[in-house]
Length: 256
Image (cartoon, rainbow, N blue to C red):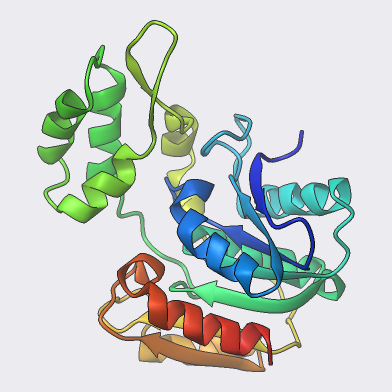
């Protein structure tokens, strides 16, 4: 099965963008259009169990990386640039280790190769509460989620997973139960002794704690030519919080 994607641009250098946990390709549509104007053919991909892609009981980074390989084979993409945010960044790391010859430029967004403890309990509880209801309006969903996720921006990001079903009620696009069953896979560290020897850009939000000073040694262990840069006035969703600086730094690297 081939991952669902939104392809922007009929020609240009292939650029695949991978969203984070509980996200979807639509989160990157505005930036995707801007990358396309700069000469890239942009592939905004929904990873399995997310967005409009297929659902499966299997879910770990090796499998997610193989999904990207099948996607590239399907579209005859032999040399790509790859951007991955959070969970998508871990997928991009694993893919680049396994298929280094295919990856021309690699950008990892606010995630390091280290282990992260599970920290999505409240979010998953909120989404479970949504799924248990016969939702007739987005306002109903908002009221339920507010009890679990007080941060407005995070809540709006999560509610993008809602869609109208045939029976005129709202459902979730994510395969929630499988993600709950496999949530510990999301924080798994990179393993093995393989390294990615090409230049890599790691971008972090200056207010985010996902990449810390102590992570730099581990990053350079796997990515010896990595450069780590900050995007100002931003947290974990730096591409949404400061898209201008994010685009500037990313384009400078991709075009170098």
